[in-house]
Image 1: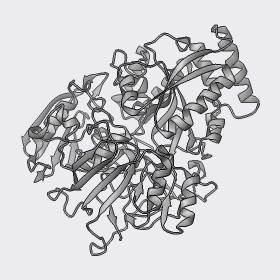
Image 2: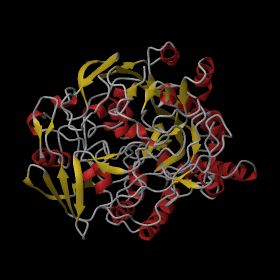
Image 3: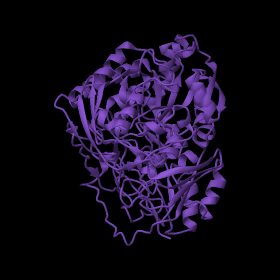
Image 4: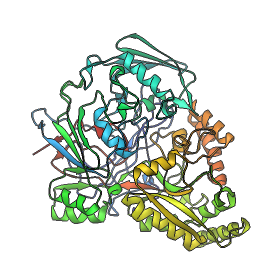
Length: 606
């Protein structure tokens, strides 16, 4: 359990706040944190809208003292602020060459993050591709250059001019220019055989791109149909990975990726191993440092931990998704004092309950949804699960609530004791009024990974049966089948991932329940509420924080009344690595969903 009720996620948004999550404590770029005892602190949220042409990183909180195995502290308790510094390392100290060996839970379904950008696809694809913009080393908070070296934004917020790097060569030896950037964005905004128009450049399935111009090979001008408070931030996320038109095929690119990134994919034995080799024509001078990467697919938790301790694996990112937590990692660290680092990094994907609005069932009655929300005891969940960080739909210091006391004002989050007992009594009354005094039975989808199969799903099954006699029959499906069930709307009820955020902007926190009429690949739960859709569209066009706060309050009131899906907690990850691995990607927050996963600045001190 991680008792951090005030823990929030903080991001660097080009317009409003900060995109992806940040490290606030622990190792500097070249200094390892104490094993298993980093105490990350959240940065303060932006007080006002930033200039979209000059994204600004928020201040960060200095480390707090450890009080638990994970070392999480509340943002409110953090002492003086401190800003991150990059520790320069002489080039003659960095050791070039070598192959980094990492373990992952399973092979990607494909290498197209615009089709699906879960951690399997992100881990596999990130070393291969670049975006126009990227999160910057060391802590991957600041939005900065990638294939675009600089950019300008018009006064009306609708025209973006990107000045692109020259001499970019892809893995097939072909040049990448502004025409390829135009092609990529046009493809992203179009419906293809594999997906509808992508949400990074569309709203409700309608493209935001008015026109794109390429006056020369190193200039891209993007004209939008409306102001977009998320456009720059979205260009730094993983999905808009840049392709070269001559080497792109809508079907072939799923399994045979060709990018401009620091590493090229050389082999993929599905379910066993992925191999990457250095891209010698990479446009960033001196990078990457490694000769290659080997990613071993190891599903069994014990086997994975044994391979790591034996030195056959150098690093495991997102440890808790592999069944690695403070308890089993500390045992290994104790046997190798001073040699291993791990810490609890917050994951930006909410865990919750969701129901299929396209199907008939008891959840169609609002009283049933409200009863479930009131009956579930989040404190019990955070006692049972090592990776639980309590939070609701949007633990944003700017737009939401971040302390346990403030959460107690939300329906379903009453403190243990009389308050929670009253919520449970109310839940039973609602179930009786809805015609389900004895509960009901339902088949519940569950993803076949240790985090869900062995922990969250059975825990939720017990809690619902114990409180409301709702009896779940768990339908455990491996990743490919699980995705297909979502995409075909062939499911009823699920305990699992339920919304996510990459940017501290209410649209990004709350778009899980939008939009009416969208296909299951975009609107998984099938919820349709035109009032919500209108609120979300208003959010997308503004960067005014007071306006966004007003829209957020109205939206959250709607959420807690109608409950399109139900928040449980935000998970912590436990990345672990041997200390000879340098410039390790930061996962105190969302390194798992950023350019940190490219591993282009990692090197091996051995």
